[in-house]
Image (cartoon, rainbow, N blue to C red):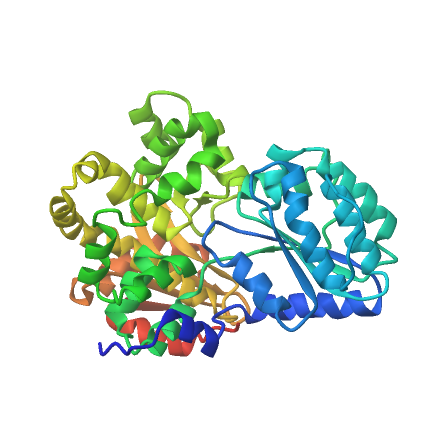
Length: 460
């Protein structure tokens, strides 16, 4: 690679990466607010994903107010917010305000005569500060919605709490959000675009960024600020004293999980280490964890069930997968070796990572190709296949029901280790189910990434 002297700030000024779809939605909603009445948009997603940056990018050419909800008293928050109201309106406010509902109503009244954007960040914190805020907002919003022209963005990074606030039918703000945007990490296409701006793009650099950062903007920003592009550079930076990344898993999840974080961390470490079935996990933990797995999937949005192509929805032939690439890496290599890391034996841990990374990377490469294929509109179903007992595992199956074709692929870091004949043998059971489909067999490896990315360009 040939890294340039471009700074992160300069890149941010030059281009806002990867959120064209979300910006289009937000701008469309704003036009609706101007022409009709107020709207509420919820923006959620894991921490470091760029929710605040997206909101500010959207609002930069509009009248707007940004309110950050830090965990302090409601009165102190209102003392921070009142000058922002005065700045927006250009008029002083006579008196004092101690309740968020009071200043919220002031903003709603101002929006009757002038459209603007109101951003309330870390909104879920009011559950700790003053839970009555949610019902108070409901009453005010219901009163003003059809008179005001405010576009409200409620941003929250604790997924389970934001889901509860806006999607639990027992909560006062249920049904009040006109749109809920769940912000995802950058796609493999956007990761490539960012590396190209830094003149640091190679297939290997792309893969290590995908494997470790998973496309989370903040993680990429830190590595780019420190000119870490190659596998060696990235690992040396992550496994160093006072590294931002060492405590990141705890920082992200302990607040989500609360007092039970220990059992959840154990489950996630086992999944990251390859024990992906409930039976395998329970054999180590020696207790029933069905409820924990369900909450990890439905409430916390951290894991997902994966079933083989063709399996029924109620099939028990399933595996669990950590959705977030960084969290999978953190639990596999950092949390698992935390005693060594606390003793600052970073060189030793890096040796362990280098030893195990080829095996670990194989699964990530499979997910990379699945992500690339998923960008295409050519396929009705994309996934993997295996039979009971993990027999006849197939890395990628892409089905086109319209043209009645199937692509079946084996994916390995080293293409020379792939045998199409063995792949055809493993696929016999699958092919019988689709006997009238044309079958294409593929061998995919690192050298095919660029060609497949060109073939399936990112629609966003």
